[in-house]
Image (cartoon, rainbow, N blue to C red; front, side, top):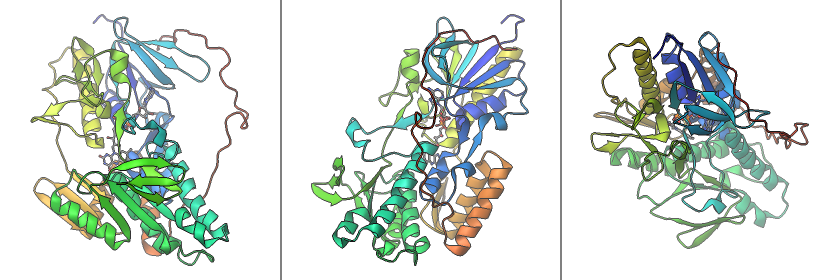
Length: 442
Ligand SMILES: Cc1cc2nc3c(=O)[nH]c(=O)nc-3n(C[C@H](O)[C@H](O)[C@H](O)COP(=O)(O)OP(=O)(O)OC[C@H]3O[C@@H](n4cnc5c(N)ncnc54)[C@H](O)[C@@H]3O)c2cc1C
């Protein structure tokens, strides 16, 4: 590398990208972090926005706010559409321009995943997934609107499908959502409706797999299933979803009439592998080497959910800890290269354990030989989630909200907010797309 100050581009301000940016704070480099949203999102608590416990602003923070004291870093709101790895360029669509070229000396791709409907994309229209704040607010609207519609509906025969909620996928998100909806109908909504009994709502959790929370031990899976059933959730395992449409779902040949079907089953990586034209695993995640770079390109790192790396013969899971540790590693590796010091040892994931919450005061925890379920696990779950929120103000706000909800049984944010479409809101679509190079970073 010459005396010129290197330019590092990070794509994605999620767990991996943000950890990389922070690790590069002491680096003598210009850093540009590009994200298509202006906020860092704490996805593990998305389900609490979807079920009205928290507001969107309690789990997300503007990325430029988090990095405000990091003078070597510029944050750009834009969508990356491709990479030219030979010319060292990233292509970005910003609010008013398309294909803006952003040159880099080092590139870190941390673009996460999106929903996957396992080839049945037609399901998406009827069964939204939970990945972004917009998804969470849309699901919250859908759940709350179903109760409002049922209350307004004189014909009791029509209440059944309005008050049936089907969740497809019994991983942590499906389990957490199902138990939170159960809490909503049995506690928060109690005595708020006159024509319907919210507690009569049917909550169905479906999965092909033979157990809920498949990544946990069998004992913990069983404890979670028992808890769900105790909360009134109907758990249907080993059953595939054959069809999802406007009338509901067909599960193992049986039709379940429902107006609210939520998809928590599958994810697919971002198109980073296609941008780079490099080897991917079967799911489409970029195969990275032990230093998290792609073969023959020591300047390109891929981290987090969109990367694929095996450790001890098994692929690393798509969880926040992996993304954060990989982001930090990529940042440290680039710093070492810039300084000309010796490279860190190959990346190794340190697994701190797994947690999932199943309703009020109950969680499952698996960390090494420690396997716990119940209240103590729930306290650990709450402490860990508070610790990893992006700012202290979020920590205080979420803590106060949780204490309030715990004491009063009331979910905090039960507003149906329908956004107007962009044209109605007075936002103009892009008229002229002018490709242009981004100004050099100062
Ligand atoms: C509902 C839900 C619950 C979860 N619960 C847990 C949990 O309890 N524990 C746990 O450990 N993990 C959990 N996870 C998984 C965890 O959130 C992910 O493993 C983690 O977010 C991965 O980090 P990442 O940096 O790879 O991707 P992300 O955090 O998803 O960040 C990707 C970023 O890239 C941006 N981006 C994507 N494409 C582009 C583009 N083309 N141009 C510009 N920007 C782009 C996105 O806007 C986003 O900010 C959960 C995930 C979800 C969806």
